[in-house]
Image 1 (cartoon, rainbow, N blue to C red):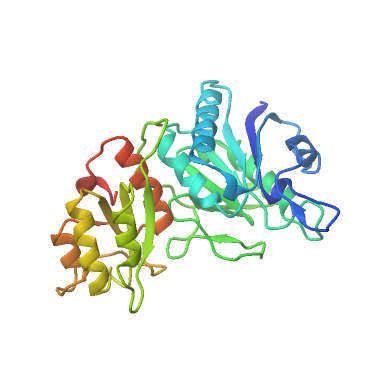
Image 2 (cartoon, one colour; image 1 turned 180 degrees about the vertical axis):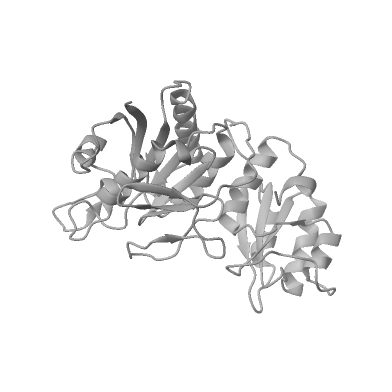
Length: 321
C-alpha cells in the first residue's frame, strides 16, 4: 500500500546554496531539488509544499502560525501518514516544540534540517530528509508527537537541543535520550511520551523575554523590562534555581506589576526545586509568586509561557507538565 507524506519546506541550510562570495545563502533551493537526491522508496508518495525560504532566525510567530495551520489542514486528509518539515537548525528546536503544543493528532510531525549544505562533501541533507520521511510514513511512529530526526536519531521536541554549532551530530536530548533511531531504513522506536497538551493559535502573542542569572548579576535588565511592555519573563537561575540578591529585588517590582515569571535552570539536567531558604533562592522566589519551571530549558519555557498566557491558562498548576 502506498504511503503518503506531506513535506513542508521553510528554508535553512538544508535548502542553501553558495553564492558568488562562497558564502551560503539559506533557503534558496526548493523541495524538489532536494528530494531528487534522496533515493526514496517507490511506495511513498510525497506531497510537497514550499512554504517559506527563510533562514531560521528570520522565522516569526506569524510564520509559525502559518506553518501550524498548513499542517492541521493537511492532516484533515486521513490518507496522510505524517508530516515532515525542513527547517534551519538555529531555531529548529523552538519551532518543533511550538508544533508540539499547537497540533493534536496521533500522526507524526517530524522536523529536520542539516548542518551542511547540499553541495558540501559529507553533507547530511539527504540522509536526514530520507530518514525523516521514513519516520513520518511509519505507523509505529504514531503518538510520538512532534519530533526532530537528525543524524539517524529520533528526539522529542520538548527536550531536543542543538548541541554542536557545526557537526552533523548537531542535536541531542541530554539526560533523556532518544525516542528511537533509523538503521538501514528500519525505524526503531524505544519509547513514547506519556502526556500531550494543545493550545489554540492566536493572532498575536504576549511579549516574553529570557533573562539569565550569573555571578554578580545586577537587576539592570529586569529594571529595563519593568519600564517596557513586558508580559512574561523566563528566568534562568543557577543550580536548583538561585539568582542574585540584586535580581531578586528587581523581580519583586515586576511581580507587583503582574508580570508572569517562570524559573528555569542553566544546568543541562535536573529541575528547579525550592531546596534552599535564603534571599534569591528558588524557595524565596516561589514564595513571592515565581512559577517553578521544572526541567524546562529557557527556550522551550518561553514558547510554552507565551502560549499559556495567550490562552489564559493557569500557570501555577500546569506549567511543569
